[in-house]
Image 1: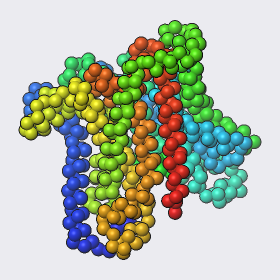
Image 2: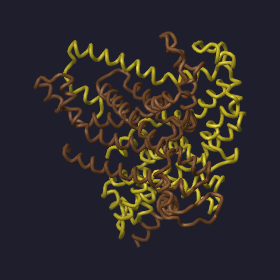
Image 3: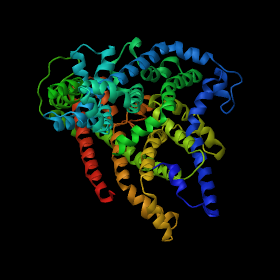
Image 4: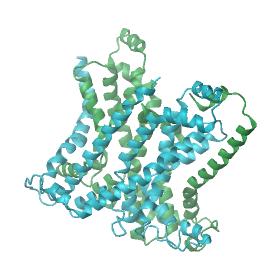
Length: 285
Length: 288
């Protein structure tokens, strides 16, 4: 049920109810302002010339100091780090959609011995936190000679229990008749998946893509220990070394932070519904 | 034939999960029983020696205590705020979409990036927080440099960053409650507080259990904010378990010892997940 449909089922509000609603709006408005303030403040600071950042804390910038952004991109090969993160996260999200679709379809629509057991096994990976397997994974990857390569950032993350779980839930909802009709036309599972199930599951795939992209893009501990050379660093790791290396130019640092936040905010604003759906589906049911 | 196709379709995901989730989960237990160092390829089996050493490691217990303090401070604050905001947002209200986005925005942004912004907010001489407190006559506090305040400062950042996520889950839970329950309560003459206390809150209890456990599991693994903002200091006051684990593994390269810390953390988180299963079992009571 949506908020809207609930509203319509109600009688018109009485005067005290309207007053209460107004009070709640004001309190919520203040809270929302506080919540957004760090973003706004960082954005404003990122456009302040260096001397104004420190001396005029509350003032708007006297001019737009684009040199902060130029400096941020230049310093620490930041542009390279940003490109690394965007590339790696896109690839990881696409790969998780691919491996997830195949596995989820098999679990949802096919019968084979060991299906229940295997699915439980897949789901159980959600209970293994990355921070716990760090040392063991590091040793595996050094055995593969993958430390400080793109492979270390991409391959261990190319399948995930979340993607498989969410896509399976979706494939389960496809009507049986659809599959039977396809079968009568002589289509096997793979053709049904490719020509009918996949086009129908665009919203589910979009949810998985947005989720995996943002999670991978924001990941910190893993790229921190897996990469050591500057060319391979993700933007999160590059940002974490910023203040120690530049000897804090706050305007530039805020520009770098804004640049780092931008991709996930943009993706989120385009896919807000898909994103919220993902949380409520995976978190609750 | 169908079975073979199905196995082939599962294989790519299975291979990745086996290699990078299951195998390390088993392997970490084995490594924890050895004196493995990063730069030495061979290792001796030492039994439970690492665990015995953990028992007497004051730094480890300090990190456990700090993590517990962090969890005990952040979890109730986050859950309480998330519930309050969700209840407020679940009514007819202009600009619901805007409010939801405002509270949710920190969730999608990276912890490292927002930590940089908050580091500035906490800055003793240039920061926003001290600038706000100055007119009230509070002398500048070194938020991240004072052992008393560093942990609460991290908690505040966490609450700001995470509340939106739990708010969304609560919101979904509230909108799932059938309108008839509210109507019935209103016909009985129940006031706003009574409705919350006797309808919303009990019907949300499965959601609350879920959120408590989810959030505890997340909070016990706090790392990025500590790494970027305090480095475990001042005086070890923010050194949490995962940070200590990181230091042992990747600063002093004691992989065996670090793995023992991982295993202890792992067992603990598994117990929490087990608790979640029990609590989720309670859903049945309220199932409609």
